Image (cartoon, rainbow over all chains, first blue to last red; front, side):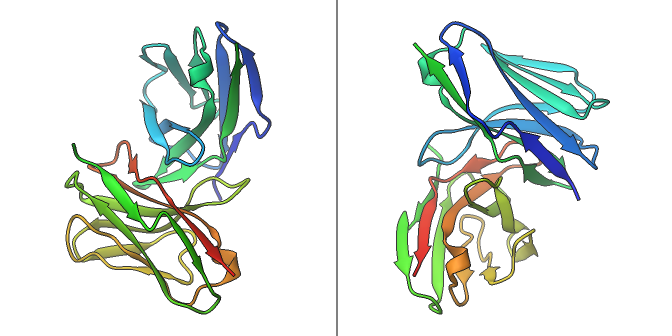
Length: 110
Length: 111
């Protein structure tokens, strides 16, 4: 079955630095991959989508890469701010459904 | 502004009772989804619908049912609540195969 792995431990980053989160997957070749942000007590909010034929996607301070050979996506936040602190979820497409990772908690320290 | 709402936001019920969680979206999206989220797990798909009168089972559908009589609503029913169904439930909708828009969630406790 498909398996998605995200760092289960919280990631602590100093304000102003680049935060990099990892999403690894096995046993599948998704057509696309999505990243969401989730704040405590709230539903996930869509951030970026990257397709299998795209190597990189950017939106403001966010950048996502997708390496189908390594079966890995990296999510970068540049010039990080305390307001970026949240849990970040990756999700893979499987036949019009999404399979979700458990998320990585990101903490940006002032 | 279009939105997706869930009710109730919190619910405590007893084992064996039938419970219905409501989900209402004003995006006019054809696709709607129900997930549960538990600590240490990713969101897990319970049921989904691609349009009126269409419903499909997800990864963890046992003990749950849905119905889709209109575009806006996809209620989730727990036929006979069990303690293992204590969780946070999220409803989502999407216009196509791309991003999903989530509701605020319902925290359900089964005692």
